[in-house]
Image (cartoon, rainbow, N blue to C red; front, side, top):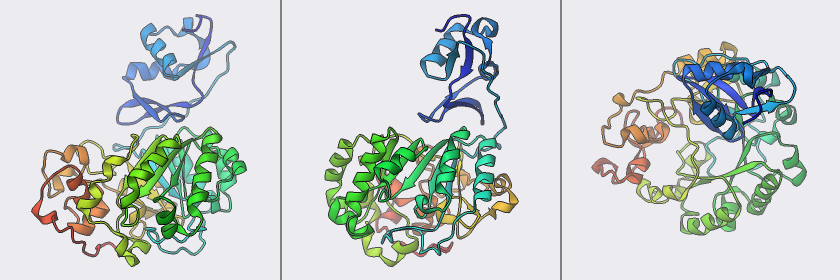
Length: 400
């Protein structure tokens, strides 16, 4: 505990978030701490203008806040102004921002079709970031295309620390040099690694495996948290155990392993698809905890939306061809239009429904219809459903 004469302030990486319940959020670690209103109001007063003696408060709570890095102590006063808003009734916590359609690769399994070199203009980029912050957002996913190819990426990069949310760069890793990694201001970078050298290069292009590994190492050396995303497919399935050993040796914080939904170029390369029952066997290989689950009583993704490089706003990146609105209308108005799907409307009432949240809704629609179960999650949870045994996919009705 600091001395009674120390000035108390929220740590630089912490902000207050007024979500369904009030919270403190550490963007550096991604930790979210639920608070009661009394604790929230106390932290609001910890703005660097008052000493510990002047603030009073519960000593046990204050000690916990220091232990968790929520609060910091100063020798002299230094006032920090907190800009606090209120989240929508169902909070928008995760924003997938597609900065650009440009990409230096042409991956066979990419769910986005070939773009035309479109960038989201900077005015709209910062309008979205400002509004997401005001809406109490937690995690910004900078996506593309390859986000580093946005013409204004480095300007955007320099401004990220002005916001209270955690910023995560989603990248193929091939453009991450040692100098590039040192310039990054993101809290985390997620690099795609889709198999060992042969299978990864077969999907993404010759030499991309080694470049991605170099990118992971450069990011880690720069002191930025690194996670890895792997898309399950027929080429990498036999070597996932070997890939897991490699990833484990790289010191990454999270390994996300998932089966893709058929969209974009994958629709032209269906031979890469695994049957849902087989794909489910590999889901447990991943580790780490971040996910974009649903609110209580609602399906998966009810705290998530995506913004496309053309300004369209959809439920996630798979739905950008069928947007709920566009940025000129305002992110909040578009979010209000994206009514979350109630679990009670799904044609599923198994014991796991409150945990799996119905699985990926886009993938479920491809196999069992708009309100059907996601067969990959069903098989992963060991739920036997006769209608899922074949795992046959039909065309998605929403222009996948």
